[in-house]
Amino acid sequence: MLMCDVAVIGIGGVGSAAAAYLAQAGADVIGLDRYSPPHARGSSHGQTRVIRMAYFEHPDYVPLLRRAYRGWHDLERATGRQLYFPTGVLQIGPESGEVIAGTLRSAQQHRLAIQQFRYEDIASEFPGVVPPADCVGILEHDAGYLLVAECINAYLDQAKQHGATIKTDSPVQSWSRTGEAFELRTDSEVIHAKQLVLCGGAWAKQLLADLNVPMTILRKHLYWYENDAPAYTPASSFPVFLIVTPQGIYYGFPQLDSQGVKLARHDGGEPIASADQQNQREDAADRRAVETFTSSHLPLLSHNLVHHEACMYTVTPDQHFLVGTHPEHEGLHFAAGLSGHGFKFASALGEILCDLATTGRTSAPIEFLSPRRFS
Ligand SMILES: Cc1cc2nc3c(=O)[nH]c(=O)nc-3n(C[C@H](O)[C@H](O)[C@H](O)COP(=O)(O)OP(=O)(O)OC[C@H]3O[C@@H](n4cnc5c(N)ncnc54)[C@H](O)[C@@H]3O)c2cc1C
Image (tube, rainbow, N blue to C red; front, side, top):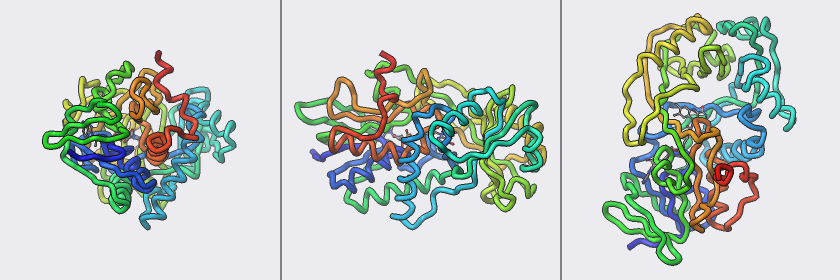
């Protein structure tokens, strides 16, 4: 039987960060994953993730985002690798809609620098973008994207360098509380841990079923289109973008490499009963919707699809995260239900989970993410 201070179940986006922070804090850590992260069977794959601070979803995320940015910069310094690319993020939508009004609210409340565009200025400032009628734009300069697999690799390297044991292809079949410790069983081992950190992504629906918070798993699609239009390249300072249209919310990235321009639809998605049902099949209707969007709003982009991937969102009823210590199991800490916007926070969540597991407390303002809000 193996013993450790802290076991981390799931070392993908958030768990890799938690394992790294815990190992750096001097804890004896075992990180386990059912696959070998970074992998394409969960929620942290597909090249890139958007990061932005003027958060339309809720201003209470901004203090966590300040920590997250700091964490990513620390990781870049520690590893000597560039993980964050500040291309800016351009958000376009109706002035009184959730995205524009919410972004302004966060920016004003937290004094964040943003640049606003009237409808008629958007096309001249960003040739290649045709905004939906009656929409305005907000550009946040200190925002952009993270390279998702590189971030996970960097955290796993940090975890190993600081002494963590990483066990891949080791699904945890069960965990239980035995006296003062948690007992974890894999196919081949029993592990006893004083503290347990759960970062199971879409599998949190099973792992944290006793929180009694319904989580919906959605299959989501990412598309890469061939591009020869200079308008959508970093050389033309083309930013990451999110555009609210009457038909849905779409987002994408400047062309990064020969794979072209990556695009996706943020709303919608196909509900699946469990993460084990995930597969990489395309969805013709979703693809048609994305291509209808590009015809109208990114008309210089080709429709030659070069690559497709499917990924999972794990969505809570209010689309806000579940973070904290389990109300019934002292010593069990979790970050779950990240609702399709959690990767940018992985650095901050890793640090918070480390603090909870090593000191029982965190100075981060996470009360608004407690599952108690549903009880
Ligand atoms: C298409 C798409 C686009 C997105 N875009 C953005 C974006 O632009 N910006 C942003 O901030 N966020 C975005 N997100 C959300 C973000 O990517 C996720 O919230 C985040 O990556 C989830 O990280 P995680 O650690 O919770 O899950 P994962 O990275 O999936 O990690 C969970 C891990 O747990 C492991 N695991 C599960 N059960 C067990 C078990 N029993 N035993 C051992 N291991 C187990 C899994 O194998 C997996 O590796 C997007 C998500 C998707 C799908």
